[in-house]
Each structure stands twice: as structure tokens, then as C-alpha cells.
Length: 104
Image (cartoon, rainbow, N blue to C red):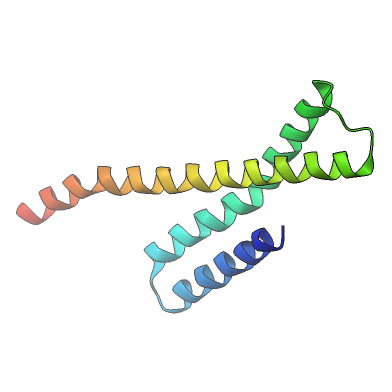
């Protein structure tokens, strides 16, 4: 979880730096990454609830901690991968429009 906290801090720092440099498109991309890493906590809570509701083994503190950690990692990767895919798709859709604008 320290790596996730480091990523959260790094993405905020990079976003801030891009804005400070006046690179607002890059700033927006990094803010999307930062928001996704923060929102992964909400998704993790949904996963924890579903895991508990399914009757997953959580009788000891160690099992509960393991379940929490698995849910956190899964939510974090899902949110960040989804954000990267969305950013990539947005760039792919914008490329033909940029090319058409330059040709005109």
C-alpha cells in the first residue's frame, strides 16, 4: 500500500508541475491519473463489501487484512488501467480530427 500512496503523491506532484509549466493538456492527463488512484479507494470498498457478503473466510485479523489488501490492489489496478485505456482511446479519436484541422 506504500507504493499506492507514493503513486498518489507522485501523480499529484507531476500534475501540479505540468500546470505550473503551463502544459495544461499534460496537467489534465496527470490529474485523471491522480483522481483514478484516489477513486480506487471507493471501488475497493465495494469489493470488500462483496467479499464479505459472499461469505469469504475472514475469521482472523490476518485473513481480514489479506482480503483488504487483495481488494485494494485489484481496485487500484482496475482504476488505473481503465484510466490509461480511456486516455489512449481519447488520443486515438483526437488524432484524425487534428490531422483534418491541419489539412484545412
